[in-house]
Amino acid sequence: MDLLLLLLLSLLLVSFAYAATDQDGFIGVNVGTALSDMPSPTQVVALLKAQQIRHVRLYDADRAMLVALANTGIRVTVSVPNDQLLGIGQSNVTAANWVSRNILAHVPATNILSISVGSEVLTTLPNAAPILVSAVNFIHSALVASKLDSRIKVSTAHSSSIILDSFPPSQAFFNRSWDPVMVPLLKFLQSTDSYLMLNVYPYYDYMKSNGAIPLDYALFRPLPPNKEAVDSNTLLHYTNVFDALIDAAYFAMSYLNFTNIPIIVTESGWPSKGDSSEPEAIIDNANTYNSNLIRHVLNNTGTPKHPGIAISTYIYELYNEDSSTGSESEKNWGLFDANGVPTYILHLTGSGTVLANDTTNQTYCVARDNADKKMLQAALDWACGPGKVDCSPLLQGKPCYEPDTVAAHATYAFDAYYHRMALGEGTCDFNGVATVTTTDPSHGTCIFPGSRGRNDTFINGTSLAPSSNSTPSGSSAQNLHNADTSLSSLVIDVLLCTFLVFF
Ligand SMILES: *[C@@H]1O[C@H](CO)[C@@H](O)[C@H](O)[C@H]1NC(C)=O
Ligand SMILES: *[C@@H]1O[C@H](CO)[C@@H](O)[C@H](O)[C@H]1NC(C)=O
Ligand SMILES: *[C@@H]1O[C@H](CO)[C@@H](O)[C@H](O)[C@H]1NC(C)=O
Ligand SMILES: *[C@@H]1O[C@H](CO)[C@@H](O)[C@H](O)[C@H]1NC(C)=O
Ligand SMILES: *[C@@H]1O[C@H](CO)[C@@H](O)[C@H](O)[C@H]1NC(C)=O
Ligand SMILES: *[C@@H]1O[C@H](CO)[C@@H](O)[C@H](O)[C@H]1NC(C)=O
Ligand SMILES: *[C@@H]1O[C@H](CO)[C@@H](O)[C@H](O)[C@H]1NC(C)=O
Ligand SMILES: *[C@@H]1O[C@H](CO)[C@@H](O)[C@H](O)[C@H]1NC(C)=O
Image 1 (cartoon, rainbow, N blue to C red):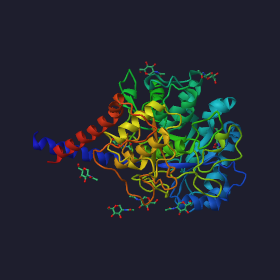
Image 2: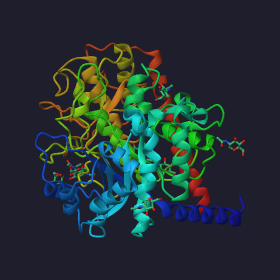
Image 3: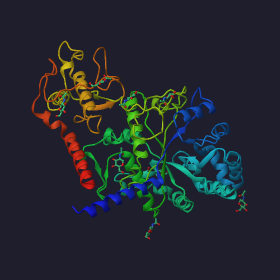
Image 4: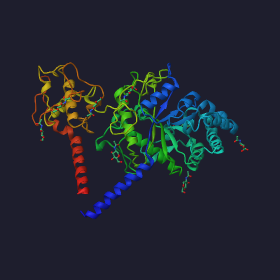
């Protein structure tokens, strides 16, 4: 290849990298207050500071909370609660009073940067829809009168359920019943350089899909290329539900001829606990979703339609809200309990400084519950054979022999492989029978690879009989890691390209 061309190419890459840093995405957190033992505003702010959370969204404009946030630099989105919306939408004087009492009294000491006028109004309070746009306009006019309009943006948070037919994203549109609201609202957002606020819950889309949406697709886990969703109109590939929903919103706006309004995600998250009808509301999934979401946002990955355009996101939510009504999962969206103890430790290595507790090295690869036994056996055979895992601890009399089940032995072998591959993406899949967890599966003297203070052990090339109980199943074992193999060869290709560019 021509050296000059290569040089130009790398310069081009560098300049793109710089351009992208102009609009870095941020991660914020929603502060709900439905706790029987709600921490005081001072305690809330102490937690935010300890966890290096720099952006919060409040569901009201609570005075004590705004006072506690003063002089912290924390960027704040406040809300006009739905029960105050009618008054504000009907009278610009009421709106001006609201702004004076809840905004002017606190800025600039409290760093208020946006106002959400109502929350999911179209779907939860449809009778207020006719006055939504005037409420938004009145609040904005009051800010203009105080010369705060360039500093504080005004918008209203929508449920993503106002977007219909969201897959393929290119065919999505806003429920047409709401065009009389959406069209003037989008005009307002465009003319004031504001953004569309959207609540995005792949958890609910997954739950409603009855299996049509794979769990991995909702959790941002790597999918084999043949399982990625492709929009047949645009040929864009979707690797996660979140991106597909954001692009659906972009397309729904462009359907109404609005093509330059940015999107901010005002709520997204995953519950860590649920009742028996909510089997995927578990800690591992919540951790996986939120960790991957944070990495995705902070990487400024953007979406397939607008790569590199960051989608800043507020996680739902800071605390588990034990006083929430509804199903068990409703009470368990929090990153922390009322005492500020983390519900789980996010794994965020490499994402900079948001949420201080970061122990990414403590993840383990385990057999999925209810995984097919034959597939587990085949994967176990592969790991202990071609996968080059040292399976000797699984032999009779050795520490990990008990319990002598395929699932327990497979878990050990999967975890050993995963750690040998340095926790690489796609190395904990085993044709779908394995999954990542943050719970150390070590028991008794059986210490798993990756467990604190333990070196990984494996030997090169020697296959050891995994277990007396597990019968070799032969033929299909080799095929198990096709996705994995192609991933490694991809990595090698990328490395080769990098070398080509620089030498
Ligand atoms: C309310 O609207 C009226 C009519 O447009 C205007 O004259 C008045 O100044 C506004 N009042 C406030 C407080 O914005
Ligand atoms: C569209 O919105 C109207 C008004 O709220 C609602 O009755 C209707 O069910 C919605 N359509 C769909 C397909 O959700
Ligand atoms: C969008 O623009 C096109 C082309 O100018 C026009 O035909 C169409 O009616 C517009 N759609 C809406 C909803 O305004
Ligand atoms: C980060 O972004 C780059 C391109 O912008 C992409 O190739 C990479 O996969 C992203 N990483 C993550 C973890 O999203
Ligand atoms: C982890 O979180 C706890 C509780 O929030 C906090 O006390 C501790 O300082 C944090 N650890 C680090 C390393 O930030
Ligand atoms: C793994 O995490 C522990 C804290 O849980 C930390 O002390 C250790 O340095 C980490 N190791 C690596 C390799 O990141
Ligand atoms: C891991 O192995 C290396 C090399 O054998 C050794 O130097 C190191 O101390 C070991 N670490 C632990 C935590 O056992
Ligand atoms: C495994 O093989 C690699 C290269 O093939 C070698 O560098 C490494 O030392 C070997 N490890 C052991 C434990 O034999």
